[in-house]
Amino acid sequence: MKPKITIVTSSYWRPDLLRRAILSVQNQTLQDYEHIVVSDHDPFTEHVCNDFKDDDRIRFIEVQKPYEYNLGAVSFNIGLDNAKSDYFCYVLDDDILYENHLKEHFLHFRKGNTIGHSGFKQIDFIEPNNTAKFIASTSLETLQKMNHNSVDCKDVSRMSHTVEIGKNNKWKTQTECVNNWEDNEFMKAIGLGSEHSINEVTTIKCQWGGVSRSKETKGVDKEYYDALMSKVVKDDTTFSGYRLESDTPYVYPELKNSLFEES
Image 1: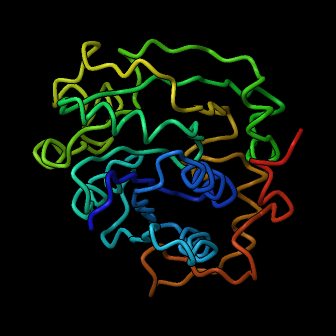
Image 2 (image 1 turned 180 degrees about the horizontal axis):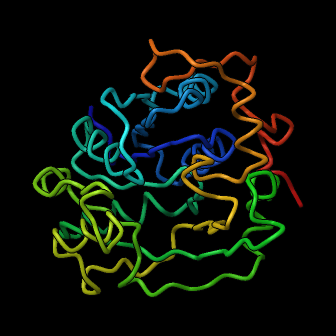
Image 3 (image 1 turned 180 degrees about the vertical axis):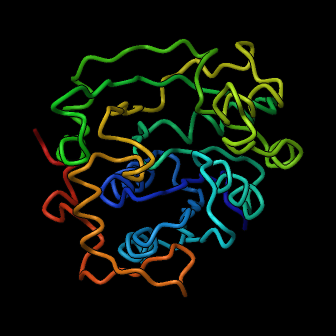
């Protein structure tokens, strides 16, 4: 039997945060799902997924064409092409889902809606806390207590839609979106607006940008980037161009289960 809903995660050089995203998916009240995790030229993603090999709902796929700066668009298209269910949603590798995410999206579709989007709570991590280590050490309980910026649903970039609609309107890559984010372009293409809102908040969005978080450091802070690079060696036979040489993909293995630890 096909799963009720497909969730797709694109991952790019964030193994410690990817693990937390996967754990938040496993914590859903709706358990009949498949989770497609796509490695976008990342030498760590497969090893993170191997930690969850006993969960047959998780599928690992690798982008097998030359890298382009795309903020997940290429991976989300691959997820659409490989989805087994009729319904589709996504989570970024540095975001956390509330346990109601899949249930609310699935119920929205069962009411006859073809597209929809839920709200999120945004946490702005500012210096000196805008680091992968700080986020990886923060439990869900603490995240829920932190000050949030509420974002109006009409601007939200967490959306769900049928696979059919998704396949008819591919995510654009960032190189094709001159003045806009690729998911906003996608929302525009499928006609997603405020009338399609799911009246629930289902995601915690972690905003941790800063001067040390650039394309040159794979979109992560410099300390984290340097630690990741110390774990790999160049290998042109791989799609990522690197091979993991460490016994763990995690920079902070002691924080592997911090999401559900009491603060």
